[in-house]
Length: 271
Image (cartoon, rainbow, N blue to C red; front, side):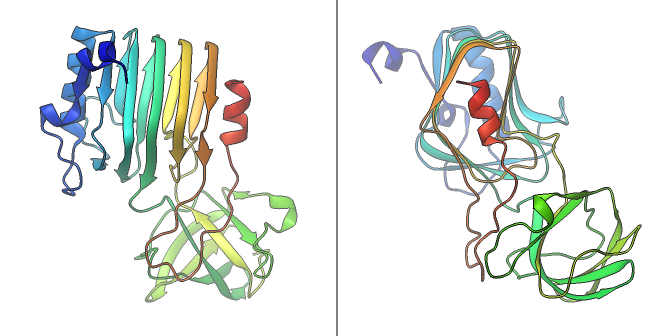
């Protein structure tokens, strides 16, 4: 960061955000963004650490935590920080922002919007899934889609196609075992691995809508319910050093399965 950028810094910690304390930093980040509106062009800085943000904390917008409109010359610099998302929500929505830079930031979810496990029984229109404790379930979780995987190769079966809209309900039949009730006969087999997607799309990490001169640099997205990066009607936009890879849940007994990715499409939009 050059001297000119330092003079234009807006630090989220000056508005009450405290990295690594486990408390909700949403309101502090919103306050910092309001200051950015007054001081643009400027750099929104996250001093390195973990910042926790919670779904529903922005009472003015139930879909996305940080809507940003009409701020020109804004740089969001994570300084290597992680934004840890709690619950189902979108993160940033940039609308009509010119000369926008996102850099040095990681996004993850405290509880991913999916569960994974092993199919241990199949009976007609239902199947049972044993789920590791690292993905806590209590029964009644919605499942918008699911996909089965080969337990040896850990690659998707049946051409990698999700089953959408076929789950009627789920119930907990014993600790960490979900019974998945379907509207049609089950096509999975005992022994396969399965990913249950509790939320499908809609809630994205970063949306750029009608923005120009967008740069995304060194941004990593581990998990998010929807797309990692979406650009609509944007011009002169590019990305570098970005990645989309699932985080390993701390203490997980098995590594996360590969899931359908949106990063390739996002990179094409930002080529």
